[in-house]
Image 1 (cartoon, rainbow, N blue to C red):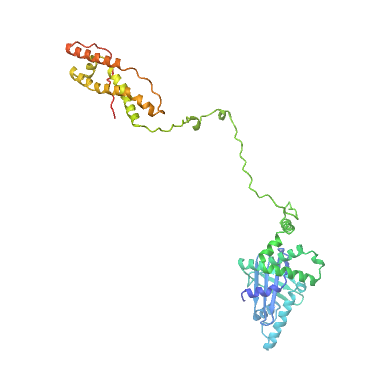
Image 2 (image 1 turned 180 degrees about the horizontal axis):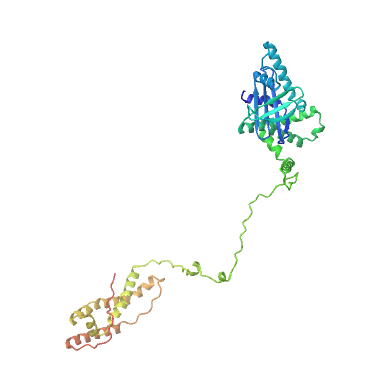
Length: 391
């Protein structure tokens, strides 16, 4: 048995589909048959619209099967020419039976296969025949069904819906012209043809309703003629309003509530040489005044634990430069006020003459107390205060 090739498929393009139904399983089978009178071969294609089977018989195989089905002598005729003529006549008879008119006269039955994957028996009142095709495989089956059945049906359907005339009322010549026109268009651009054939609302919805009806759907879709243009804009996201509860209604301080507002910093003013000396004098002057108004020397001696002579020398030495600095500071603001009008106003300082007199009298009293050796009065201890340091 020869294998089914693409050449055999091309020979079947010009053949019509023949239909037989298995009465036991109610399965329809579609047939395509072709034969060659040159090499006396026969080929058949069978499908149930889901799977495809095929069988190719050579001249010797055909003659052997015909004799086996009709219970004839298997021996060949003595004359080779007569044998070849006999094969040619019976093969033509089988071809005639596989036509639209002859196939209706044959009875059909599915038998148990012995050589192939499927066994189909055909019988008339004069002779019997049996096909035993083999499965072509899923890939080749899909390709054959697409070329031989699906694409032609789509094109014929397009012709039926696009034609202004009823196809049943056309003459064979007019129908051939209309079919050839649609076929040429489909052959050139198959993709465009399929789009035009199935994108029409009337065709698509009719096919949809037929599919639903065929598969027993309870609700059948409607057939429409205008699909319209839907709105394809992205819908805006709906933000659900938050549910306010009693706990949420109480105000909770957030980070931005806790932050204190920052005041803008004023621009830095350029400092002059006189301002530097004034700022230093302002820092040192209060510290010197606090040193002059310190507690009695006797308390200071008891707190430090040093002899009176040593403490007196340490306290007396830094007092003289402080007086000179305080005198120079009293004279300085008069000249600087004219040069820097933007400088903030300063508080007036008390006159320092009384402080100087008091400090002189305190020194004299301390010296007299040290010389006389009088006991110092005890009192509340005060922290030791020293003069300010200049950096």
